[in-house]
Length: 296
Image (cartoon, rainbow, N blue to C red):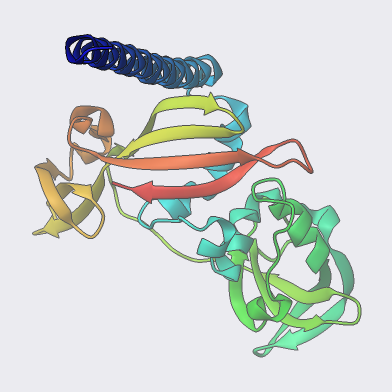
């Protein structure tokens, strides 16, 4: 084979190698591109499915749906001015007792005798710690508990509107017996008077929906202070947040017309505070329970 033939063969081999390399690069690029497109499509599909799944699970609820409204009614006095982001741990033991105050009836108490308390004879009754816990389970998770002795020696632990033994609805707690798991309690009157005032609608539920095992509720709220000037004019200042933050309005009423006036959150919805609630499904009872609330 002469020199020219060798050169031709070498050139042919080089060309063949280049063609093979280009073909290999093209195949690799196709595979990489194909994998990228496939991965992108999978990610897009997964994201779309997640969005669709969330949309399918979100169920709009009536603003008075009983699955949450009964709980909201019980805790509303305690969520109005404070964040309660840690469930029942956000409440003091005395606050927990007051949450279920309206759920007590005469049947929850056992008469044990009379005792002189602060110079006055009172009928004394037994109340079981477990009775309190059982009532709390209507609104909070099944594992709820608190230190039993933390509410003893209280002269006005709670007002129980549906308990009537003829001495008043204010329940005082004398002691706790760890052996029997019962409190010694008594009852007395609760004083207090208020002057004339307008009708005040300071809160309103504006949104409620179920998503998965949780219910989300939004409530609009306004806050106010009142002052009396010269015993004839009543001045109300309306705020968008607790602690007199975000002045929205100043209203003045006379003593003659104040009881016919109304202050409503409906007039301030765009600037009112939003209280956001989460209620979660308790697997043990099958009921929704309070999980958290936050004021924004």
